[in-house]
Image (cartoon, rainbow, N blue to C red; front, side):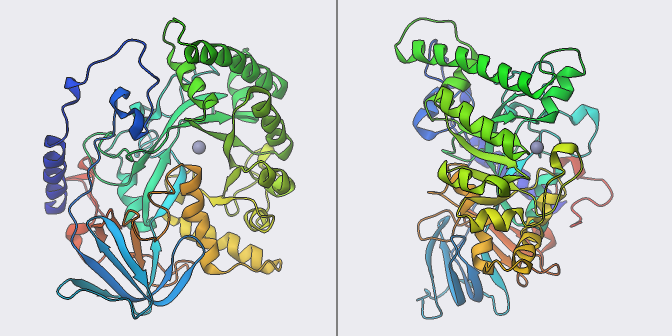
Length: 466
Ligand SMILES: [Zn+2]
């Protein structure tokens, strides 16, 4: 309880120091809103995130995976003013009189990044009243923004932090629609509003879906699309409209604002990144051709259980695959999933990412990666632990457009750091301490630094580390 009260106080203080949103004027025909800092004045829902207070901190003696495939044994990491200011071997100079944690026998990694989450939009408890992730009233809803569904009190955020070491996540709309809407990237911190979590400067994403979900949802209502060819046809017709809208906008011609078209025009101009839910290899190939037909880029296929069949195509087109370790077979289009998917994509030189798409899975992404790593090694693919960590660090950061700020332990980047009590690929390891922008936000040894959401206060089990 004390802990939670403290969080609230800090959140209130931070919010109080932010620029009053009401002071921002709405402009007609303003440039399209973007989460990026360059367009910040025009975004009616800008990030108000401010890092929690931290103090200079050193972790010494741990094994470090830097998130880009590098490893340092008996390493030193120095965090100050929210950034990583030094990283290296045991000889790395450490200033006197600052907090030093002994990491002997422990591991340090960048914070885990989950590129596919529905925390907040499908919040816990999973009741209809909190089911805000899928606007399944039309197959084409690029005008909805996931951030407007986020409930910051979702206890899942704290669980993902304490159990999973998750420091950054992309929250997407669901996959019932072909065009599901805008995603948002947040830092995993307690805040009173979604804007208080919003990752400063991160680009928005567009959630798209191919395959069974849209055709089932709308076919079941007797509407288009009811087939895969219907999926593609509705997609293409929508892109035709989007291209027209974007051309007019670029030429400065008058037209009525259209929220959905603004999002799609931003995709066509490369400002918003496409995250496409897709399982089958042949469908992914169709989508790649569609993206070329209309001149946009798919940043990542999510779920992508058949990426191993087209890993060369994905590499050539510079498209990431966000995948599970071993989920497969729960529907027809997931039938050809194999445990070696992630290592095979990695081996082909394509971009591999481990994602959760699940409020429990997000607490064990290290184990999800470990399963894939094990499957790869069993089939003879040589992958080191430190390289496998890129699946949870720099690769998702790149696909979310935030790799210049986080995703690896490099000097000048955000101090998003996890100290694990053992090798994080072991079932028995868990986060011991987590820092976000240099502020310790979780400490397994300190009950006051265990996250408790407002919703949990006064309830049995509040703040339990489950
Ligand atoms: Zn999902």
